[in-house]
Image 1: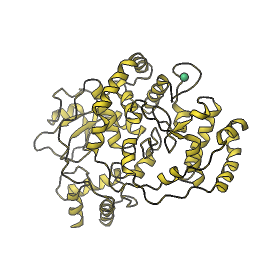
Image 2: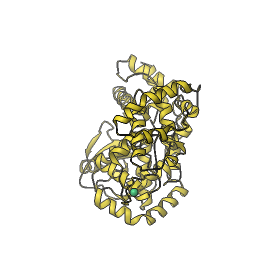
Image 3: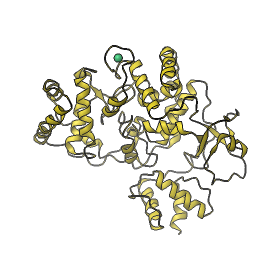
Image 4: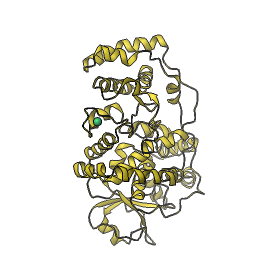
Length: 417
Ligand code: CA
């Protein structure tokens, strides 16, 4: 989940919806980004210790109703106080978002590729077994694992109960974190992890592939058969849980996530979605020179506008986004996975000279779209699908290439209306 939460994030699975909300333009909430994007404003006040104690007391009947024993509950909260650093992290908002090209460069750094290749060799039998059982290819499983925690290199060192209780006691995001906290208590009750080892990101994303407790409950797997769903220290359990998550969210075996492509001269940018065969018919080619598949549907995707690399993406790309809703995250998973199995780096140049909009400009862009009659929701500087669709529509009407990309050129054109 995206991170806003990640290592600071909540990825898996969940916070998707939340994540985009926190980091703006790209909606990236991955650990890599969150750490960068989150520059703090004023720290929020955590609940006072008295309020916190009252919160814990009120929680007990709810926990009991979920089958948590008093012994587990008491052990869970023994010595636990609100965490002011967690409270402060909820107040951070991205002024500038890290450009996707920088994000992807760290996603596929030489060090990460080397570590990933080693993991691919070490866990080849497990990955082959998972492909057989869940219909999810090793590349995407490794891509997720690499993006979430650098293949287990950093899984977050915060106490899960303390983090979730701090957020829940503050009433942050309604009852979301209270429910995650109750889920966390049931994980302890199930003896999947020792109390002292119950660690995760500041927002409660846990283990090698950063599951929130609710995702753990739905998708975690005891793949090595020792009786514990141990996504913290058992790589087979963690990777099986990820494969299960992707499979349950609709992963289609054998369907590529997509490809970088090159568009023909005079391309009509109003085209969005077609079969691969029809794209090939219109002159769209894979950037690596290989043939497009003969089956499957794909949509055009411009992560940095029409001046940057262009991709055709399939329904499996959307499944990756169920893990974390950010485009940058999904492309990171996809490209890292490809690279680990001999795929090419992204070939087209990124528009590095085209400065990203700051928060105030993103808000201005949304206010202007609203003034022109578009429904883009609350103008909060977070560029989501509605804002992109509105930009595309405006660009089409204004005779610009409709790529939906929020840059200065489109902002100036909007303001001139
Ligand atoms: Ca296990």
